[in-house]
Image (cartoon, rainbow, N blue to C red; front, side, top):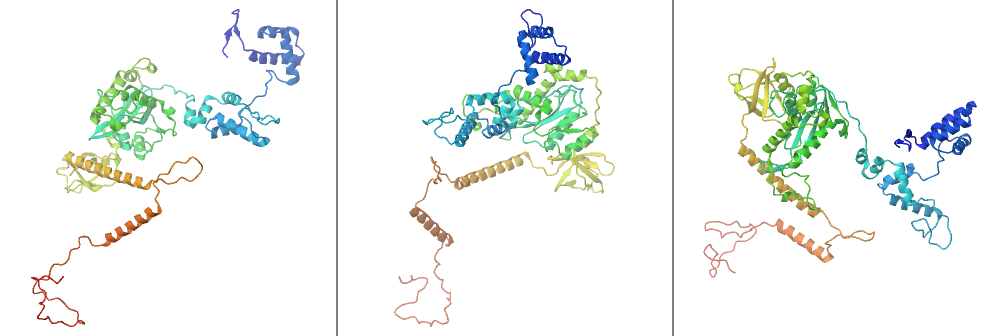
Length: 563
């Protein structure tokens, strides 16, 4: 209870309960030493604002009952057993109250009770020891805090919404970075298909500056993290979308995603002696800087783009995305717009947390020294090593069943040169080649027989057609597999819809049997053509040869057989 000024303005009014406890402790101490006088009691009465008789009554209760506060009356409380019932009913207090009433009636052996605890029988019965529904509601509000009440309905996720989180002290630039993936709720066009891109970015916690990002049209993996790290660490484009921010951080804070915790990311950052702090799962408040960036990007940028999937609608029904005729952005246009927004965020957007400065201004005004890696270290330690020495031949470098060539290979083939390759995960179209002995970077190599854009588009169309065909077949099979039942209003076994009669079942089985016999028959069977002249037909040895009579000529190719 906040302190209030008294009516005379002499000083703050102390709450009576607190003043009573403090005064009684002092008076009891004086009484134990035999120094208590009426003057002491009168001073306490004047200070608290009660009568002298009231203070003497407080002292009597403290001596006899041992209490210094008001007498606590008995009231209904939420016990652990009752709390378990509330959890079982997902916070439905009325259902718990009905259950308590039913158990009390069963224990008392009475029937015909109403919900208020009374009895409809003519005879008198003992009242039920169950509080009213209003008393139960008051006990829940008094004994359970808002977080606990929210957990009854929404579980741990809802309870966390009422937690209080600490704030980390603001440090210096590059003291800590935070990285995360963000699923962009915007549909963009990529080769005729609508996709929702993913953004992988890193942000400096001290200046709120976005140091680097990578965009993929699909779920990102460790290759997107390495590409974003390379962009964040390199500062070779001061006029680029990120400005002069970057270099090597002292710490990188990430969540427990499998891609962030991969060996590739750990080795890339470990090579620069940068520790990676992986946070516990489902704790977004521990990396609040990048989570705030995700929220600001959606509210300040993604919400203004066409085909934003979280846009409000005038209908209560869920929006059918297939019927949206808004022209989508191309993937290239979306990437350019996102880079422009990041440049605006770093160079023009101000915030109260930075005392009205932009992230770039806060970065430049920080005197903390930075350390930039050499270009050779940057490309080498953000790629995976194949780990095998290979021979450079006239066909190029052989890796994973394919040959890679580069212009720098001219004049070096068939000389027994051993090389090793480095590559970005999932980027099989290009590799980097280094000398296996000296470790010197020789150059990049590309696929020797890479398909053209038209060929890749044709392959994608074929794959899409096969996918649609399979989806249609699976849907047809699911319709055949799913058996529908009639709705029931009582506790009985539901009857299947489209039930067959015995006659219909026999008819269908007979038809199926005849279809099986027809399937065994040879389709399109034609009679043999007449035997040509000059052919001698074989005759069985057991049958005697019959001489043709003069009245009936032998059948030939020109005469038809007798009918």
